[in-house]
Image (cartoon, helix red, strand yellow):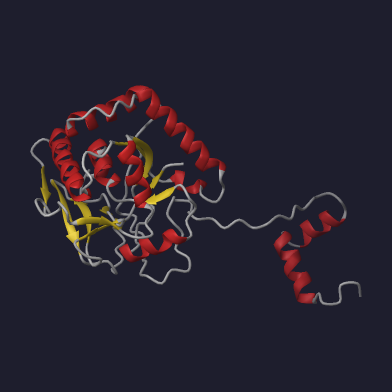
Length: 296
């Protein structure tokens, strides 16, 4: 026998993988062809959620009762509206135009869709964001400024609904980037000027903060674990990210507060939005999620 190590069971398994006896016979007759290629490991499932393989930290199933709606982003005027909201609520001028934001969004989405390993993330909610140039070298002080912008944007959108910053006045000189999160790459670029990115708010739904951080070691380059990009996204898209109780809680997993044991998260309710500190880094909750920023 030419291939003496092949067993009858392996032959039967091969026939089944081809599609069964009918397909096998058609292949032997030359009526069908078979292409053999290397299997590709996917990083995201059909919903755009990170596939949690080989993690030591806690992960649970995503609770689909908590979800987000994708805003329409076809027209330039929509991008202009989001940029204007950022400028008004942070009292800045990033000097990024709607044309630039739209073009960069289309370019980065094309990059994602051309890579079959990461293409599925585009099935989830994607929010183009403009991250302004850093004003200070203190990340905590910057976060205080962004949270003030969240308050302005939330009030502008929902009227008498209230934003509660439970860490107000405690952030200056107290916030740092978690090692391995790649968030330092974003900070370096923001020191030079404004940065355009794609914010994916809930691809890590059901991941503990520890798991969100752990999975970064094998994620392809271009992805950064979310931190200060999350409040910027909240300023630009409060109608998406703080709609009601059924919007997921949003972890800022790339950031720590005072020590390695504390981080931050947003939680929306039906008539309020809260920003909190958390020491529950190991707990996995199906209604909460870390995010990614894609910079291409």
